[in-house]
Image (cartoon, rainbow, N blue to C red; front, side, top):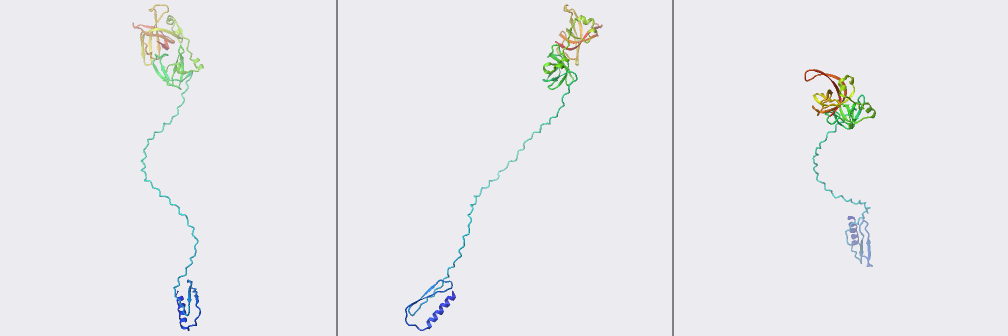
Length: 294
């Protein structure tokens, strides 16, 4: 800017010192100052040129046009999510645990008895005699084996030895008996004897299966056994025509008393010597009962 002013002052000095020229047509002088300023036009009229010093405005700086910077599209910020208040977690309730079931201990299969046997398929009572009046001496359970010893004359009961080594009678309805086993314990053929024959020759019928009916006149029960005497009527005789027979059994006869009428299915056992009510010793035939019906 100062250089422009100096140039302009120099021009004014030169103009003032020179003689005035002859009149001439007005001349328009244009001076272009190259200082990167805006052009100024100086008009010179007749004889007097008035130059007005005009401050040279700063030439507009041509700003470099910048390539527009790619502006990334602002990403919409997510709305802040309200943070839920922490929920109090309840203390876990102790659940009582059941103890584990006991481990099943394998049981050994029941032993098969020697000799003829049967399988129990329905548990029930073991009785002292082959009828419902016999006392209960044991129980049998499904799946057990029992040894068969004897069958009743009517074929409805078996004399057995249980798994607990107890001897007694069970209904055939509680057992499964194979045909070959049943054949080995079929009911023996019991003989019906005239009591006079048995009294006369008791040893002759020892071991013979005998069926005999009489009326009890003496009974003595001990632990697990019974001793009794009965009057057996002579065939065709009056009620007073009787003979005494001793009966031995290895069971207690529940419901049997003096004057009870019983039928004995047993085996001849020869004779026994006893002392009668008068103190005399006498011999009487005896039977070992397989069972007693009453």
